[in-house]
Image 1: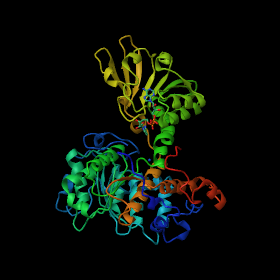
Image 2 (image 1 turned 120 degrees about the horizontal axis):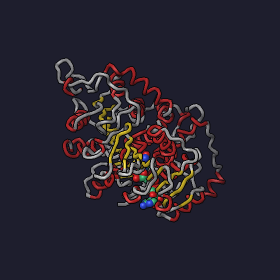
Image 3 (image 1 turned 120 degrees about the vertical axis):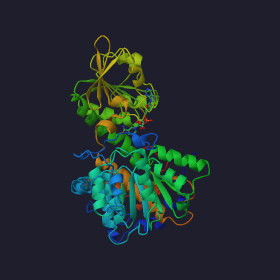
Image 4 (image 1 turned 90 degrees about the horizontal axis):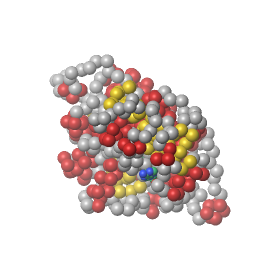
Length: 510
Ligand SMILES: NC(=O)c1ccc[n+]([C@@H]2O[C@H](COP(=O)([O-])OP(=O)(O)OC[C@H]3O[C@@H](n4cnc5c(N)ncnc54)[C@H](O)[C@@H]3O)[C@@H](O)[C@H]2O)c1
């Protein structure tokens, strides 16, 4: 079904009501105003799929002790059964706190939101149950929501991604966190359940990443939805599930799709990949890029980011495309547009980023030269036909973590990275700044849904109002000492827009 824009009332020129909701005690930081210099980073998570994906968005302090007992089993002991958290080792909280402090430096918008909330607390009374990756960056988000007045209970959306020390740091300051790295499937649902149900606790907002929390609440605690004012969902899969619920007429509260907000999309696809492609390749192969011949399959947002980064280091770039518009863009950006078969024998690196399947086939891999590096930046692990490489005539040799040599009978070796899964999510880190964009978008979506007057949002899925999307971006500008030009009345009238935004129509392509 078509995505719903936020209702006109929320986008209204001047946005009186909206502004009021986001207005904080410190008038200098009023929603409508530009931040001044003073203000100073998906996967689906269904337990059947990404809740079991390995994820390495942040360095994780490793536990030296390989405990036999799980945190959940340990907590069953009489002395600890009353603890309102369940983490691997609360003694790691000091390390976690330092990780959180580092992340705070690269998450300027959330820190600015906290300052604004010193007096007026736009989430006062909100009881938020959350299910996201538990990393230093999400800790900054959770603590921001609390600074904005909310009470939170949090579980992990992925059984491998929890930074144990960060979970400990949150628990140490009294935040009910139920998560540890390496949860079993049963633990995963138990942790979610502990967050939904607790004595004297009734959630009224949901922040989900992958839809598992929402799904669990629908199946096990549907009565809780009577008090819930809205769902904020980040992932492609979670959003897809919400649209399915809405289509079936089963969505019983308003939901905000933050995955498709412009600022977040640009950062997740273009800018984040521009940074992390090099990191992923360097960490796994120690390669020097200058003069290397690279073919990038797909010149969409991700492909553009990869090409820009590689070009900057002197690589020679070819692009494959099916879409003439994107192909022409690649030409304008100085790339050769080719069919993969034309360059397959010469290239040193093959990167797929099409979102499509079987873009690089076994037949093509039979023809690459010795030592070629092959990786994927697209969502699915079927862009490169890895299954065809698991054939009896080929030998696999693990070189290092996430790096395999696939060896042909004649001795030719190909370096396959991350077994064809997303290179950057498997082998590199997502910059905190990218996560700052997402987290700020989530925080504003929660504020909007929580404060929206009755009737503004129906039982449907909405995009974040454009004005708030612009606000997410503007909150990040002061860290670059960027100075926005202001429209005067005459110019605004000439363009037919409000001088304070939104500045672009919803169909505008950035
Ligand atoms: N690695 C990451 O961190 C990350 C971040 C965001 C998105 N993604 C994923 O990366 C993929 C691409 O995302 P995007 O935003 O660039 O999408 P996009 O639609 O903007 O770009 C994909 C491009 O691939 C082209 N294409 C499709 N089939 C092709 C084929 N057989 N050969 C050559 N080109 C082909 C399309 O015409 C399109 O231009 C998606 O699967 C997306 O989910 C990855």
